[in-house]
Amino acid sequence: MAIKLLLLLVFFGVMVAVGLYCRKQAADVSGFVLGGRSVGPWLTAFAYGTSYFSAVVFVGYAGQFGWKYGIAATWAGIGNALLGSLLAWVVLGRRTRIMTQHLDSSTMPEFFGRRFGSRSLKLAASVITFLFLIPYTASLYNGLSRLFGMAFHIDYSICVIVMAVLTGVYVIAGGYMATAINDFIQGIIMIVGICAVIGAVLGSQGGFLAALESLAQVSDPSVSQVPGVFASFFGPDPLNLLGVVLLTSLGTWGLPQMVQKFYAIRSEHAIETGTVISTLFAAIVAGGCYFLGGFGRLYGGAVDVAAEGYDAIIPTMLSGLSDLLIGIVVILVLSASMSTLSSLVLTSSSTLTLDFLKEHFFRDMPEKRQLLLMRCLIVVFIAISVVIALVQYRSNVTFIAQLMGVSWGALAGAFLAPFLYGLYWKRTTKAACWCSFLFSTVVMLANIFFGSSFPALLQSPINAGAFCMVAGLVLVPLVSLVTPRPDQALVDGAFACYDRRVLVPQREALGETEKP
Image (cartoon, rainbow, N blue to C red; front, side):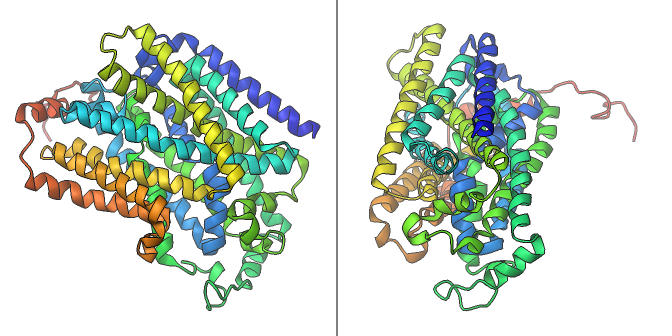
């Protein structure tokens, strides 16, 4: 217990110290929200990765999908690395950085408002962002509580409140830069922790080959009649597994707290470096989490999934580890959760302040008052999410993965296609954006209240969210082609940033007078 408490105290002390250290860089709106658009590749890549992976992935998704699909759940981690990180940085990184600076937009709703010349679109995007980030935030606390309960036997309410207060302190003090530096520290902890945990868990089962052989002996007639299916390449249900890969990988392209990392990166070279770092980080952390969860069936005799839920699987797998390793695991999941929470509350408070209150009620609000309001809203947002997390836990409404599925499905389904086409295609219309917004929010809200009436494949929030994202990629171009063209001057003004001539070093391009 002393070892675990010491690790926690050191961790909390470093996080708060970083927040206080970064106060000077959070003295204006740009510094508080985007770090002055001068954040380097390592900090940005780790901020992206740690915002991506949290207790939701480590406890909720790894446990649930490892149980359902066996070792094939590792495909979700591979998809996160290739689609959610590598391709996202390649496709979105550079264009997002250039156009958002050109349009002087600090948030995703502000981008929609200026790219499509619509205050109502900006308002709708800010409401959707604020509304659907709350269930995601609540799911972070739930996953963390399972491990704290196992390691310290501390009441869930205390875990939630301590985590919320400490995250709030360093975000309010240091803004985006404090979040980015802490994300870097937390990311290193996550990499070391996941490698240590995988080694320890497999070691307790006799090594990788022995564990895989034991997994091949596990059978569940209610899932599949095929012998050894949980140790197979694609698992017992490849179609639903594909939905998980799409939602958890492609979904990052439309999440405000993820895309906003591209707004803040420093330069073209930083984007290239960040792409490599982010991909490797995702491969280790996400791949490791799902790989570990794939062996959950080996602990079927120690956990009652029907009674305790999927969220109990990973804590059960870890409960037999040494005190030092359990302490490392707690810090690992705490790091993942606090980094994601800080990103969510910063995104929500900046969106509500800049895109809703300032735009519609206090247009001449001074910059200092904007900063004060954002800091106050961080407190409000954290308080709301804490209350929801406590109510959800006491009433046992749903699993972690389902909460995250609703949030990711609605946000990514609404924003992914309009944002992507808005960066690349001049013909994208405001009506197409509205269509994507309404379609995804209506489908995901209906899935919450009337999910049993959906087709069998779409009753899961995970699959419904993946469906919304894919549907948006089809709906936006179709609606754009049948609705009036956008104002040409508005479009040309937005895309002018890509045509501006800039000087580059000779090593990057030949001069006009050079002969081949």
